[in-house]
Amino acid sequence: MKTHIQVRSIGKPQADWIKEAVNMYATRCAPFGKIELIELPEGHRGSAKPDVRKAMQTEAEHLLGKLSDDAYVIALDETGKQLNSIAFSGMIESETSNGRSLIFLIGGSWGLDAAVIKRANITLSLGKMTLPHSLARIVLLEQIYRAQMIGEGRNYHK
Image (cartoon, rainbow, N blue to C red; front, top):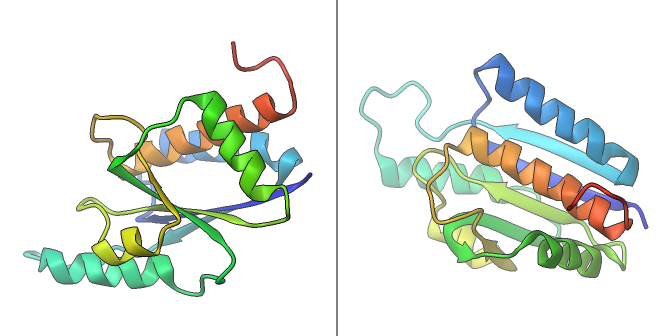
């Protein structure tokens, strides 16, 4: 079954190598279904000394905007549940088997506002180490690709 996956993230990748890696994995995922990469503005836009709480709330509004009620929302946060690649593949298969869309949410440099965690169906962690949000995007896309290959029984995951 073709999947519909959306990755909403705060901020735009600055370095060319990040853009190339994101595009490479998005291209690899494309044959399995629709994958949308949505880059949203940072909450502090141009402020020399931002109000972190207000910035996080603004970012939450951007991340949660126009979400359908039936979408399965996955927030990425270092405090979330950790899954191995096979379990992650199973979650994707299970949640998309009925045509349900998956929406992954990646916060900005201060993380996710509590409103995002509250709306999420599940909060996942990519590991115990903190990652820059642009690198988290690459890791997530690689794991989505790996999960799709596992689901297809193809030889990528060893």
